[in-house]
Amino acid sequence: MKFKTFAAFVGPSVFMMILFIALPLMSVFMESFKNTYDLREQIEVETCTPGFLTQTCVTEVKNVPKLGEDGKPIKITEWVGLESYRSVLQMDKFWAAIGSGNFGDILQIDFWKALRFTLMFTLLTLPLVIGVGLLIALTVNNAARSVKGPVIFVSLLPFIITPVIGSLSIYWLFVGDGILTSMMERWTGTNISMFAQAWTIELLMYFYRVWHVAPFAFVIFYAGLQSVNMDTLESAVIDGASRLQRLRHVIIPHLMPLIVFIAIIHLMDCYRVFEEIVGFRSQAHVISLQWLTYDFLVPDDAGNRAISRASASAMLTMIGIVLLLIWPLRRTWRDHKGGAH
Image (tube, rainbow, N blue to C red; front, side, top):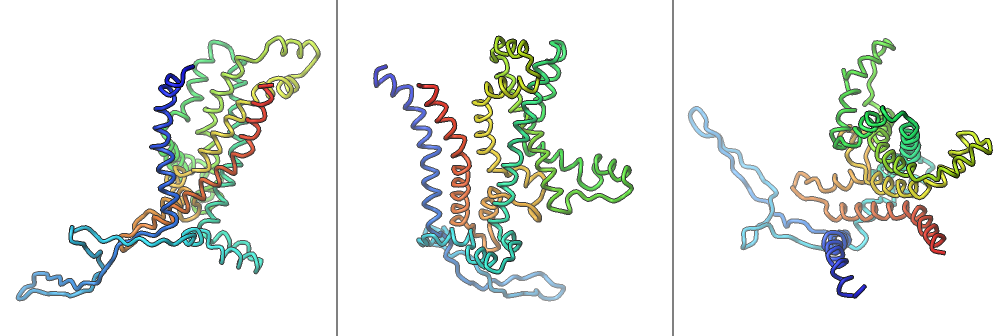
């Protein structure tokens, strides 16, 4: 292929990746090392309200942004180095908790609290998504032709629903006098509050994530099952292999590249968990790294956003994703090199 032809095909993709991925990432990286805020000043503001005979006036001091000659707030930028990362990680409190042996104090620090949930949420739901997706795929693959269509349609519904809408649906089923909560209360004869404790909220989040993402794994596995070597399966049956043995020694090795692919997609997506935090309104009990970044960007009482800390939190989140992807990417590269030989 000529270089001009290659550049014509690859160039637009490279340009879009630089424009929408590399440049924003570099911008966030640079913002994590500097702090930008409005220059503020105190002014006296008199507020008057009409009275029966005379006006009632109150004078108060307000802290407002100082405006420049162009009428816009004056911005101050300071290079702070790693200060934003220190502020997010709060390593002094972390090591103090380690030194005193009060490991529970670590989870009082927002970043480590969010990291604990994010890692558990990602790593616990991964095998469940793969297992449930594979089970559905095997069931549909062995089902009668007349019921395959309806079963596939029903199985894909959770994946079609918008994530926030899906999480809100689960929330409404269990919150307060939700349908499922009311049924459980009648059955047990006790009051049930699923959103009053962190562990029950997390269980519902795990359930929702598996319910929502397993159909994606099902579609991938079902497509992979159509290319299984039937001669190998028939030989295994003739040799007396049970269903479990055929699954373990024939089907799963054949689907292993797809399992690694699903793991990569799930790790990248699940580590950025955000919709569940919003949908389940769990900020008081459970937070994630992505929600922590969002929280830094919420304006404070003075109207300032902690952009530097939000950028540092975003970079730490990206580093976590890269670390989680090392194993599946190494396996993919090893399999690729083995296949090339």
